[in-house]
Image 1 (cartoon, one colour):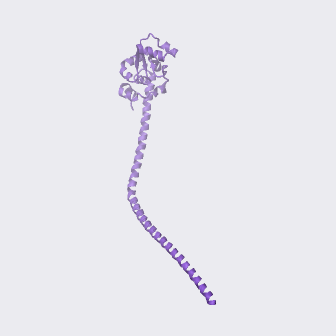
Image 2: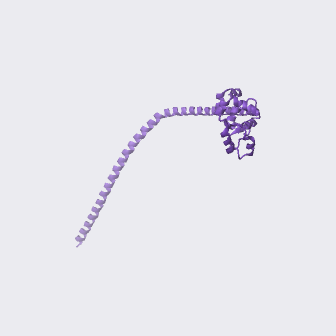
Image 3: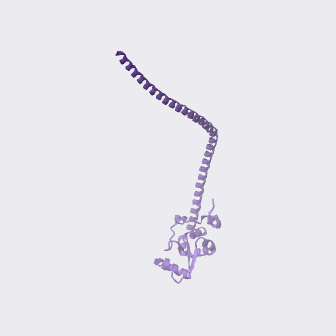
Length: 229
């Protein structure tokens, strides 16, 4: 498991955790500026309970890394436009950012998390790092458990595969027997059909014989009547 020192020293490790901004609110509520996106240097200092000078020192030492994670500096016309568009609705904001200041450094939540992984002398920052590392360890355990379950399923599937291989010849023999049975049923159906046709012919013959017998009986009755006369 990575240690807190490794997180402080390794930029690559900080990059791995840079998106886990939910860790900030797990430790303490982060107060955003009225634009609901950024935090000022003063706001970052209040969150970590350190002086603004400490935040400026961290910003100066790691400017490139923090810039990649959303820190940016407003000056001149950009600063005036931001103050006009985003801060005019907040009287507190107007007090915090008078028009006379020459620049304004803004931090996204991602940049604030980045500072938490850089700031050594802050109990809040240490708690954020602890949460990150504990959550990572929990995720590792979940992944390990899932890996074990997947392995168990693979073993079961391997057993099923072996059983299916053994069952294959049996299924082939059953298929052959079913094919032979189908042929026999076809032959039986043909015999039954022939018998049905023959019975129909016999029925026709019987009907003809009945008609002839009726005719013969009539002739006999006629002969008897004539004989009496």
